Length: 292
Image (cartoon, rainbow, N blue to C red; front, side, top):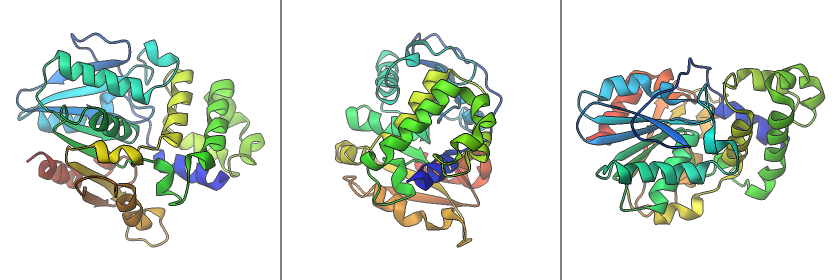
């Protein structure tokens, strides 16, 4: 199972991006929202350790036809953590974005979430089926470890998630890199390269640790029947049989099997976890099919 932790975190790894706070009139102690453009509403939710900056190019492409709402979670990047510094993150943030939808009177918006943002989007759609128009999850599954091992359970992963949480919480990023050898036995022998590959350069330590723990242990497969909005799943794929990405088709389809209405699957050849940045042209084509 140590290998499962390693592979899962590498799967979730993405490049570090320049991150900056965004502002809007809506006030929240959990999220910051930037709104651009006019038209049907589209909400963009970033993933683990990212701000809304990861959606900047996508928003640039949409804001001449849509009213785009770019979400940033407090505690990622340079944004103060606020209420996200303590306790659960995914559930409360999902509730807070739904509050934003209600306060701003958005009409059944399309919700697009990357990675952890995909979990948040699924949680929103399950908790309030009539509030969400459609959902796109980008390289996200209702239970992330199932993309590495189809038979994995929360019980299998939770001890490893606790190790990852404690390592981030009590050692911090620099100490993790410096003490990679000592942690190697617990984290599959590759903790140095693992944590150097993650975008952990900014953010509140408690927020990062809790968010990572929740990404590893949140299982929403039993909530999929509650979702009435159509769901599109976009993910990176490789034709190289030696790549883990060559074998994800069946894993993604199995993960979403409990939906009332079968999901639409869009695989993007050559993309890794940051699909919208890795292969933007192919991603935008999938995005247009989703929104039209």
